[in-house]
Length: 250
Image (cartoon, rainbow, N blue to C red):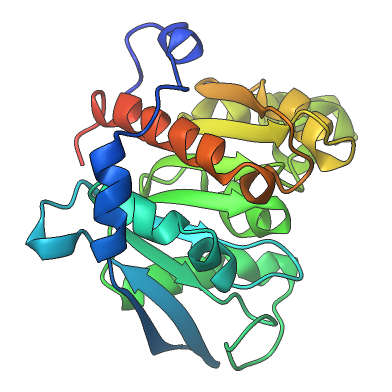
């Protein structure tokens, strides 16, 4: 993973530039396909959208829905079509225990390996991850892996497990935890709604400790800010992705 030349560059970047209107119109030409693949004991249902008319693909994005939702969340608000129109190969699975995916529920410990196996089955070697709330359990333990170009966490859960050394009981483990934090050089964006009083503020405080992290608040939005204000969510993501792509070889 290549670090930005200046740690402050990611903090100074303008992330609210509007998505071009022609891209919004192109989104109507995007086809979202429903597919299924086998991953271990799971028959995984997922939705997939690619740039229309064989346009150049910039990168792969995997969208992971929150608890009580499914992959339809990303389709119903038009996000899969919008990002595909902007040149991204979009993949959104129904996570185990949700939607149309069949198979046993996963423990928190097994979720990261499931995601790696799912991406491997699809032949994805590097990916941008967009996770909502509880879906962060699939990604956070893997942030030090080179498979992630960058990650967007929407009020992500479980952030305390990787960024709060004080949780560890001995001085040696505290030092170890601090060292682990410094190895997590993946570019990360923590996005919360300005009305979120649950996980959002805690996640924002925790993820500020990561070396290449950025916080952005979505106006007039609550915990599920990507649902309350999908246009602002898409604009911030796209500008963040473009920034990272300028400093990372995909």
